[in-house]
Amino acid sequence: MTDDTATSAKTLNLALFLFPGYHLGAWRLPDAIPEFDLDIDHYVRAAQLAEAAKLDAIFFEDGAAVRRSNDILNGDTYGVANPRSIHFDPTMVLPALAMHTSHLGLAATSTATFNEPYNTARRFSSLDFLSKGRAGWNLVTSFNEDEAQNFGLEAHLAHAARYERAEEFVDVVTGLWDSWEPDAIVRDKETGTYFDPEKMHFLQHEGEHFTVRGPLTLGRSPQVRPVIFQAGSSEPGRALAARTADVVFTLQSDLEEARAFRDDIRARAAAFGRDPETIKVLVGMTPIVGATDEEAAALRDEMMALIPEDLAISNLIPLSGGYDFRRHDLNGPMPELPESNAGKSHRAAIMSVARRDGLSILETARYFAEGSYLKMIGSPATIADTMQQWREADACDGFLAVPTHYPTGVEDFTQRVVPELQRRGIFRTEYTGTQLRDHLGLARY
Image 1: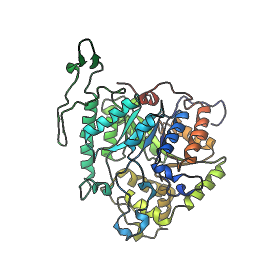
Image 2: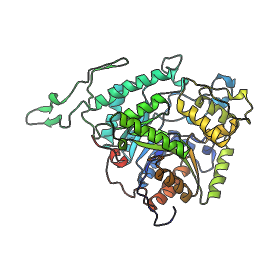
Image 3: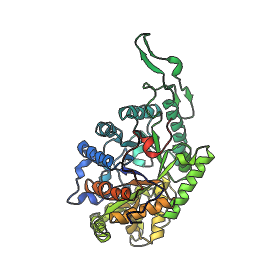
Image 4: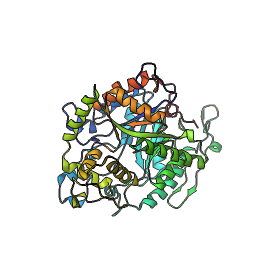
């Protein structure tokens, strides 16, 4: 696949996932700049690197609570001193990035569990105007119990209830986005008509969870509907994604399982009357890049050695739904994890990785301390080989690249891996549109 003449008819979609402290050890490397967590100048440079590489979008996760593992750690400070805890509200970062980029899509997480649909619709429509059509909303249902306690709840909403709320939430948001016709705002000085009330529509939504009059105060935004991202592997998560999402993220780390996931999402989308080609599945991947495969493997080992054992275990606990791994020999096999009220995707990923690779509890914890996504370790050509293989096998439509640290991890992917993909003809060398829907190959409204 590395021959200079090799090309593929199947091109990739690529987004950059940027989250401080994502790799729980890499921030300690000499060349890492952990202070980027609260420094907008570093975010701007990362976005500009992504745009120079012609990526579809830059994407930000969110969590509205300082992470902890649970009281079972009996005061272990690693349970709360997780570097993933320190970060901006990402919806506040995106307007700044819009002012320093011109094509890159700008997407951020905003939970349907602890927000209201009117505020969410208004916020992302505003961003769509500010960025001239580059906004994306990652619709999630929060799984962290600690977040519930920041919003007046003693315990988290049940998993099914979170998705029921999200189903109605997204219907209200899209209804609000659609509430103005294209030529409703005329600003006609001669007649004194600012907008045509006949082309403005009140939503008048009355449902189980929300009562919303509408419309938005913005008119019709450039994309009309900002791109909706979603991630979820549970039954209600897949149903929500297939019905509402434009882009679906997945934690799949096995090619055949990833292909089955994509086929399932596309079939469900078709059952909802959607064209399966209008929904893109991106596999999360963490690139660890070296000049050679051996150099990349050595870098992985170096970063892994910087993750304290207690931090790795305490990080795995909330991902598993609060399971107390310390009841077991940490060098022993991963036990069967019980169902919980937490998110289902991570539980499934933990069991899949541990069983597939024969990992102990501690080895599994270290794997997820590197990040939850598929690890691609090697030279740019080796990583490109794997990405091309997955795309040609229809295991995905592209990838959500999750660098281990800033700036080197971001630079390695955008300036070393992406050029290799471009040389093979499987990723663009120039933008052909101006809006995020253009980059992703999605229909415009």
